[in-house]
Length: 353
Image (cartoon, rainbow, N blue to C red; front, side, top):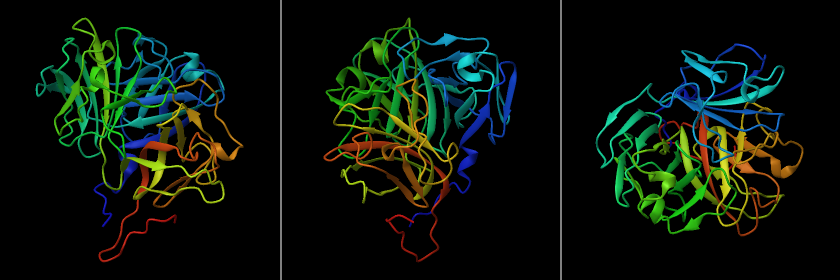
């Protein structure tokens, strides 16, 4: 049965579209106080801007660069009960610019976690399967960090805050596990032997395992941030699918909910992290692809830029290797607009609806 524990997904994840004004700009309508906000200008070749409550509202990272954590007093200046406030920084608030902001709810400024060999500060929402973890490294090849979720995360993204290091990603889905890795800010294929990053070990219900690479464990002089996601039935899904290269009959990926957001990446060749949502260009047959690893503008018009959302899953369109190549495998992170909930005794369809 596909019963969901979250009947209103927008209480925990929501996409907010807004128009910049080049000055102080209070953005409301998110529906909750966000703890992690990811912003991209839709029609401008500007960087993605990532903000979270643990680092502090004015500190930004960019998913398309390896730059260290930087403070911009005129970027996102505050998180509010129903959104956030922006300053005049062009990358988040250029006058008349159109923007997408993806927002996640964790649990405020966080609290101490001492479960790992490295102490951490964790803002966690166990209901929605999301946590933000901040920690200082120790350069040990066998370190552990508490993530607070109570279940093993299936996707972990880590960034060294103090120096120019790549965003390392570990996934446990399909044929992938934490013996392999990729970089969020690059389009490289997933590579084997993640010992230096994840100690070749999948996370447990309480711990992330890290190696001694400066990317994830740069020593006590460097703080790091980790975004951790677990599967929550009817709300979030980290999974894998195989492309078939067939534009007429592309694959359908069952998630158990109508998606509000999908990010996907081919694993066995080089290509971008593609981002789609249900707000920018409507419900279905929509393009609007953005790339997490690139400053490129929103792409529309071609079949491979489209990802159809259905009541119980999604279908990447076209035959391009970006999302549906022959002999290509893909991983994805999806969040729900609405759960696909069955009545007692009903079977759950696994085809497009």
